[in-house]
Structures are given as structure tokens and as C-alpha cells.
Image 1 (cartoon, rainbow, N blue to C red):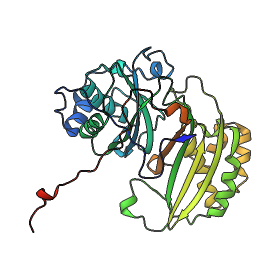
Image 2: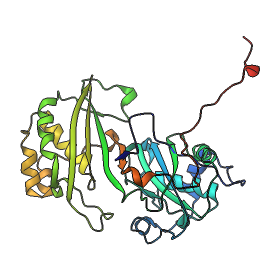
Image 3: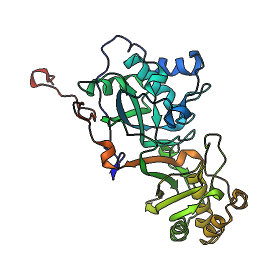
Length: 340
């Protein structure tokens, strides 16, 4: 298994952009054009993800993306409000000169409004190859706003699919457990003034591990056309680092708002309002109303998509394709050193 989103520095993609002039828009103007002046476009996300819009021939490229989700309405394309996918597609259109439906951009996870990502993965296709990925990688980050970064770019085989090739996803929810909130973390960490019991939360989290029907922990969503409520959770860790609790869960996949609902119940256990074995009882009910008796979903800003994992054979670089780009450092020659 290969992880496409490790702990801080790793994962990025490379590329060389099409040699043409269309890189004039600054990130601020790009954001403005999407949120105000762009004509409404058909949402092709469902068709892309079930394969109907995938081209039979072409070159497929994979991106590892980090973003601060504070000001975005989630990942998935929307006609009315700016999303991460909107901005990424607009940048790719300017660089490749391809139409949106020809790029076929697909993300591994459709994160909600306000949710962050360290290791979101997306793929897109082009009818042409690149000699190098460094140029397109740099161009993408130059067009995107500073709260969206392409960390890595690589060539992948035609059978790779950012969503359907996933073997597991890792989400991290952070809770600041102290009387006074750290103002520097307020946009990325949930503040709980209740003194939490991490040991009780760990006991409760163990009940989530394994293959279960998570119907009781899912909100309904129009995006789940054929929902499968049975998911396999590999681990659910509760880690203490000073005043911050990290609730990290890894599984084959998650239903709409499942992670935020699971965390909400663990918070109630941590406050000692309910016993740890309440998790098993609510799971067995398969009824969302049972969970609603005890808690509502926690806010989105504490949640981060930390990593997306794939089998290594899905990420092998095809022949005659450029090497992976992870960005590059600027250097300065001795002759350009300033005098002090």
C-alpha cells in the first residue's frame, strides 16, 4: 500500500505547462472571476466519478493538494459559491487551454465547507504529454490563492482513479482542551472548555473499529446516489499533545459527516455525559435519530483530511512519462550575494 499524504512535508506533483500566454490572472482575480463573473457551468462531477466522462485515450496526472478550507464551500464544484475544485479547474484551464469537461478533474474526498486538507488527492487528464512537470506545478501554485497549494504532481497509469482506487483515508480532528483558546489555532482547532477524559474517549473509540453499518452516524446527502452504509474502520486513535487532542481515524471510506458525528459522540463520552459503550448501542440501532438524542455533529473547522492511501501499483509511473515534481528550492549563486 502506498500513502499519498504523509505527515507534513511530502506528497506533491510536477508538471510542465503548455507554452502559451494565459497565465495573466492573479490568484485574487482568479477567485473573483469564479465567485462573481463566471458563467454557470454544468456540474459534471457525478459523470466523471462513475467513469462516463473519462476519455479512452490520453495522459493522466495526479495531484496532492493542501488547503485551508475556511473560506471555501468545500471541495466539490458548485455553480454559486467558490470551492477548491472550482479554483483548481480554472487554473488548469488557463494552463492547458482545455475545456473543463475534457480535464475530467476528480477528487478523492468531497470535503465539506470549512474542512481542511493536508493530503487531498485529485486526478485530471490531457491529450498531450509533458517533458517535465516542474513548470506546470509552479504555474498551478502561481495561479492558485495561497490557501491552496499543490504539494506534488505525478504521472499515473490510465487505470488510476483518485476516488475509486483508494484503499484508505485518514482524517484528523483536533480539539483544544483548555479554558482559554489559543487565538492562533482558532480557525483549525475546535475549542472545548469541558475537561475531557481521554482514556474514556479511547475506550469508546475502540467500538468504532471494524466493519460496521454506520447508518446512525451519517447525515443524508444528495451526493450519495448509491450509499453503502457498511464501512471498515482500521483504527481510531486519541492522542494527547499538550492541550490539543488529536482524534485520528483511518478507514476504507466514510459516509457524509460520519467523522464529525463520531467525534461528537466521543466528546460526550469525554465529558462523561455518556458511557463508552454507548457507541455500540447507537451503531446497532442503525438509526440517525438515536445519535441525535445525545449530540449533533461537531463544527467542520477542526477536521482535516490528512492522507489518502493507494496500492503502489496504481501509482507506478508509466513509460516515457516525466518524473514526479515536489517543488524546488530557489538558489543564489555566489556572484549574486549582497554586500553587507
